[in-house]
Length: 412
Image 1 (cartoon, rainbow, N blue to C red):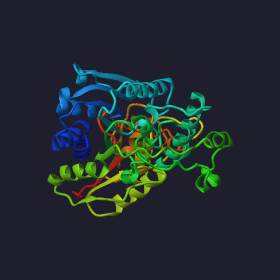
Image 2 (cartoon, rainbow, N blue to C red; image 1 turned 90 degrees about the vertical axis):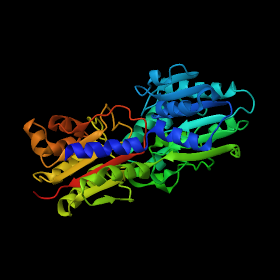
Image 3 (tube, helix red, strand yellow; image 1 turned 30 degrees about the vertical axis):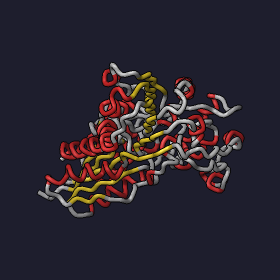
Image 4 (spheres, helix red, strand yellow; image 1 turned 45 degrees about the vertical axis):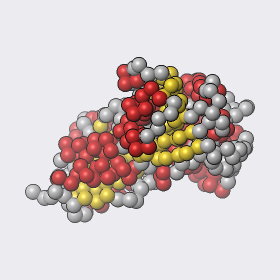
């Protein structure tokens, strides 16, 4: 059963692979003019490789910016590409260096030269140019607070855009003399162009984040952040030269999982409803549904949140969701749940997520771990390492949020 779920997960990843989806789009549209390539995000290597596979020598120069450890130079060997690695999820000096390299690359293009732009998740941290009076220390403090806040991606990006000179569509001002084809892999709810990579090339008004969403209750901004975010301003409307297409998104990954699950002979439920909210609560609810429901395979996309304690442990939201589910599934022999990031990353560390079953809790306890304590300390990863339930894929070449795959087997 576990092998089946892992196979289904891999099929979901294949369906949204950056190289495959970029190549398919470019073959269909037959671009044959010389152009420059810019790829930014966790999937930048695969997306750029797909573009080179199809366009070859038509790409005369290229800039690639990806997460540290996600660069595969061998796949790009022999091509005219400058490759940079930068920090994620908390930006650092490398992110600012990448931002300046991006502006320099654009500035040095010949007048009116066509640009193929490829964006995938992670771009918000990997490349940055700050507005005046905001320092790197400010940027890092903002991002650390956001990562621990439990805010959803739309709220997080609203704040990120307000202190950036390129997010929120502002990068378009630097490309206004160039025809641009922007191809994106969506890692956000609703496939919102304004949110993917913080909307580098998408026209939208920057709203001052000091609105009711942030003024009261648990989402209230700290005073130091309010002083930074008052610097928000609008971006000029210069987007007529930009054509945008989303070439991979969560629904395609779910469909890939659905097709892979068909030969197993189960009823398959491909859910359109996105799983959101607190990861621990979502895990418990889904596990209860699996335990009490009919046999079948259940597929969801997910974008949950975790409020981090002051000194969080190991593991991200998928691992928290999976461990919470394992608590509900304890002793159940026919129930399994896989929760994993499609980018191969779930929080800090190298794990993509976890695959839990009715024996997870017992295996972890045998090694001396307490599930409730680990969940409280955002330390699900250590428990799941002890129980043998972690999933490690390495960089996957895509990023379409998280995927959850549940299985309730037929009673033997």
